[in-house]
Image 1: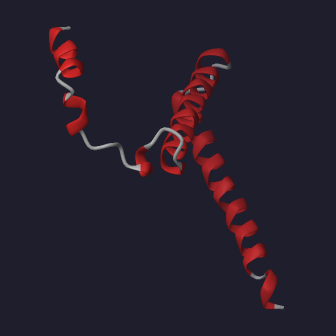
Image 2 (image 1 turned 180 degrees about the horizontal axis):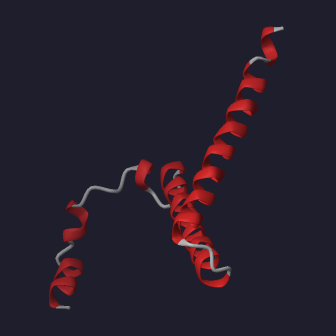
Length: 89
Protein backbone atom coordinates (compact mmCIF):
# COMPACT_ATOMS: atom_id res chain seq x y z
CA UNK A 1 0.00 0.00 0.00
CA UNK A 2 2.80 2.39 0.90
CA UNK A 3 4.62 1.68 -2.38
CA UNK A 4 1.48 2.49 -4.36
CA UNK A 5 0.94 5.77 -2.50
CA UNK A 6 4.60 6.72 -3.07
CA UNK A 7 4.20 5.79 -6.75
CA UNK A 8 1.38 8.33 -7.03
CA UNK A 9 2.80 11.04 -4.76
CA UNK A 10 6.31 10.94 -6.28
CA UNK A 11 4.79 10.92 -9.80
CA UNK A 12 6.75 7.83 -10.75
CA UNK A 13 3.93 6.93 -13.13
CA UNK A 14 5.22 9.60 -15.55
CA UNK A 15 8.34 7.54 -16.30
CA UNK A 16 6.35 4.48 -17.46
CA UNK A 17 5.90 4.00 -21.19
CA UNK A 18 2.27 3.77 -22.34
CA UNK A 19 0.96 0.45 -23.59
CA UNK A 20 1.27 0.02 -27.35
CA UNK A 21 -1.98 0.31 -29.27
CA UNK A 22 -1.44 -3.31 -30.37
CA UNK A 23 -1.89 -4.44 -26.78
CA UNK A 24 -4.71 -2.09 -25.80
CA UNK A 25 -7.90 -3.70 -24.54
CA UNK A 26 -9.91 -2.69 -27.61
CA UNK A 27 -7.27 -3.62 -30.22
CA UNK A 28 -7.87 -6.28 -32.85
CA UNK A 29 -5.17 -8.46 -31.30
CA UNK A 30 -6.66 -8.42 -27.81
CA UNK A 31 -10.20 -8.86 -29.16
CA UNK A 32 -9.00 -11.93 -31.05
CA UNK A 33 -7.33 -13.31 -27.94
CA UNK A 34 -10.56 -12.80 -26.01
CA UNK A 35 -12.53 -14.63 -28.70
CA UNK A 36 -10.09 -17.56 -28.58
CA UNK A 37 -10.40 -17.71 -24.81
CA UNK A 38 -14.19 -17.73 -25.06
CA UNK A 39 -14.00 -20.47 -27.69
CA UNK A 40 -11.80 -22.58 -25.43
CA UNK A 41 -14.29 -22.16 -22.58
CA UNK A 42 -17.14 -23.19 -24.90
CA UNK A 43 -15.18 -26.28 -25.97
CA UNK A 44 -14.48 -27.14 -22.33
CA UNK A 45 -18.17 -26.85 -21.42
CA UNK A 46 -19.14 -28.84 -24.53
CA UNK A 47 -16.71 -31.60 -23.60
CA UNK A 48 -18.12 -31.70 -20.07
CA UNK A 49 -21.68 -31.88 -21.41
CA UNK A 50 -20.84 -34.69 -23.81
CA UNK A 51 -18.99 -36.79 -21.25
CA UNK A 52 -21.01 -36.09 -18.10
CA UNK A 53 -24.57 -35.53 -19.31
CA UNK A 54 -24.67 -37.70 -22.41
CA UNK A 55 -22.26 -40.37 -21.16
CA UNK A 56 -20.04 -40.28 -24.25
CA UNK A 57 -16.53 -41.59 -23.51
CA UNK A 58 -13.70 -39.05 -23.46
CA UNK A 59 -12.22 -40.42 -26.68
CA UNK A 60 -15.64 -40.03 -28.32
CA UNK A 61 -15.80 -36.40 -27.30
CA UNK A 62 -12.31 -35.85 -28.73
CA UNK A 63 -13.39 -37.54 -31.95
CA UNK A 64 -16.46 -35.29 -32.21
CA UNK A 65 -14.41 -32.14 -31.71
CA UNK A 66 -11.76 -33.41 -34.14
CA UNK A 67 -14.35 -34.07 -36.83
CA UNK A 68 -15.97 -30.69 -36.16
CA UNK A 69 -12.56 -29.04 -36.63
CA UNK A 70 -11.94 -30.89 -39.89
CA UNK A 71 -15.44 -30.12 -41.18
CA UNK A 72 -15.21 -26.41 -40.30
CA UNK A 73 -11.80 -26.23 -42.01
CA UNK A 74 -13.30 -27.84 -45.10
CA UNK A 75 -16.19 -25.38 -45.16
CA UNK A 76 -13.90 -22.37 -44.61
CA UNK A 77 -11.59 -23.61 -47.36
CA UNK A 78 -14.46 -24.04 -49.81
CA UNK A 79 -15.89 -20.62 -48.97
CA UNK A 80 -12.51 -18.89 -49.30
CA UNK A 81 -11.88 -20.68 -52.60
CA UNK A 82 -15.28 -19.62 -53.91
CA UNK A 83 -14.70 -15.98 -53.02
CA UNK A 84 -11.06 -16.09 -54.15
CA UNK A 85 -11.95 -17.28 -57.63
CA UNK A 86 -14.88 -14.93 -58.02
CA UNK A 87 -12.82 -12.29 -59.84
CA UNK A 88 -11.01 -14.76 -62.13
CA UNK A 89 -13.90 -15.55 -64.51
